Image (cartoon, rainbow, N blue to C red; front, side, top):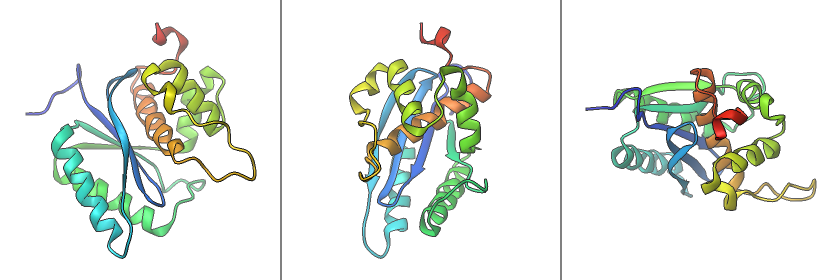
Length: 177
């Protein structure tokens, strides 16, 4: 039996080149679990889908939130796009509600906090969700590779966008207490 409304578990997945990052929340500022899963080799998506299946079995989410990759600004590899479609299909088969939001939606929700760039959004998240403060990577310099922890903050931004668009703003200063 799945929970609804109060105590609803929201899981966000953010595919990356090496695997995916995930964040599970029970409320706008209430993380329960987060992390990354990775795989390599020729059957990477199959192994990552198995890892996602284990996550779903263990975490029992009510809602899955993904980035809307149909948006013109979404730049992901074909493999990441296929993985996301597999994940969404698996979730729907498990009767999990699937929502997707574009980067534009995320920026709209974080505009109240004055955050526009991915790092500004990650900083706004770290300021409000104290459990994630130690995970915040330093600002990226042009010559640096992207820190893999940014994918975790991308997943959390999807969860917070879900709450924002659902009328329960997680990025509003008043919600932070």
